[in-house]
Image 1 (cartoon, helix red, strand yellow):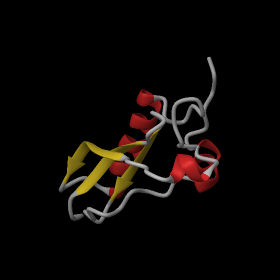
Image 2 (image 1 turned 120 degrees about the vertical axis):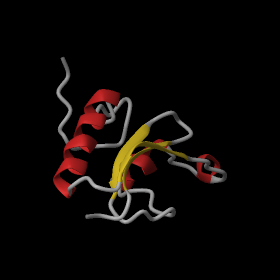
Image 3 (image 1 turned 135 degrees about the horizontal axis):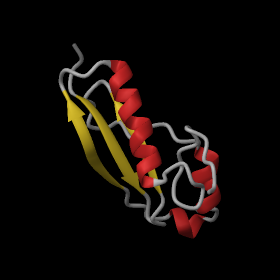
Image 4 (image 1 turned 30 degrees about the vertical axis):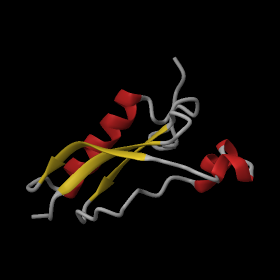
Length: 98
């Protein structure tokens, strides 16, 4: 059994999102999106001077298996479109335009 496992959504000031999971119940964990995508959206010093991000818990469980957490995380990424480069910073699962 895990500690509290969570699926969370990070919202950046530009409105783009990142959805991730935390299997450690760590309040300071904000995921590991590819920083180059974020840096491209905040290219100059002025855009980086003050950044406020929001972290929302989308789902949590104290009894879920790691595979269930991963499966639910991928489902949330698809549901919110976080893998679409115009919407979010997730790159897995790979975005497929309709």
